[in-house]
Image (tube, rainbow, N blue to C red; front, side):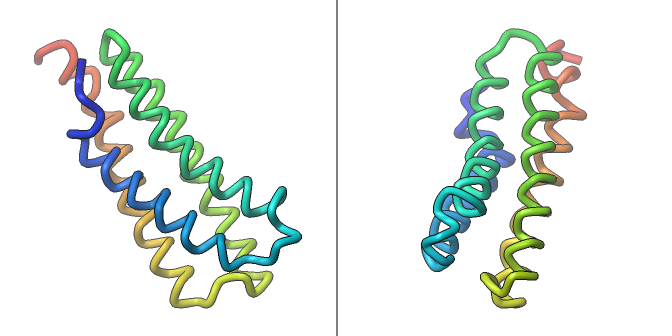
Length: 122
């Protein structure tokens, strides 16, 4: 089993979760069950899928869960754009979160691409 905490993709995604939770505390209370919940769920989903995928046997499983994480990162991208357009995020804060989301995406994508080779020992 790959300890998920050692994965750079998980570590960066975890930092993204913390940043999303911190930022969404500032959003309007009437978004509590809307954008706030969706943004938090999407961010957390990435870390959970990486943790679960790393506990599965075989590279194909890790890749499958990393792929799901990539989908959650795309969902988060759309949510952050909506928050920016509604004025819930300042452009600088949006850019900071988007940069972190992009970095997480690159790392998760790299993990997905290498998962089969890593697990098969090639």
